[in-house]
Length: 283
Image (cartoon, rainbow, N blue to C red):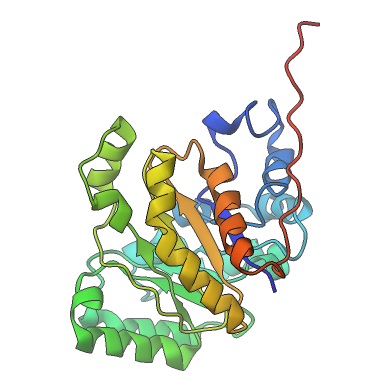
């Protein structure tokens, strides 16, 4: 029984020297992060397909059981909207191949304009993908959260492909006005969607966005502690990603979430002890 937890990135300014050793060369940053968490969002691949040599360094810094679900490039999902994307898809699959089992799922994040009328394109795209990988789809069109018929249609498309639906829970962020600059920025940029907590596969993935206030973030995830505990009892193997607007405490919060679930399921495998940060010296 294993719960994977992580953050939206593996390097972040506020962590350096406080939670993670600093300075660290790029080829060691993911390794240091992986002593804190056993998963991380593969967000960088959304912006561009990385060099295969870069992905090889990611694999070298992590154990095979580490989860790094990688996002398909926006060229495929947003610009081409899943159509006529064979060549960029081949380039992407070649680049991420060194990850092996770490690429727990290929993450298809779709734009907010991708709605129920586009499900045919999604169905065709999923059908044509290689069976070597699992797939997870994140949608942001309001109809998929408010229209029961659209929900059933999307679940049908995903179910036939064995793909997961990735919820992005922003309820806690939007439940009251922002109080920090980072929260105000998130209010403008992040989607406002109802909470969804139904799993379609054995490996559900959740993105949770809290607040810059630690206590409010912890209060807001109480629902998920129960859901994730139930998933584990059902034999599922979930991955839970913690976001806050400034992400300053995301590393410690991810471990705290794991601890709260483990308090309900003592048989849950613990996370490793983080790598200690050497104190700064004068000499």
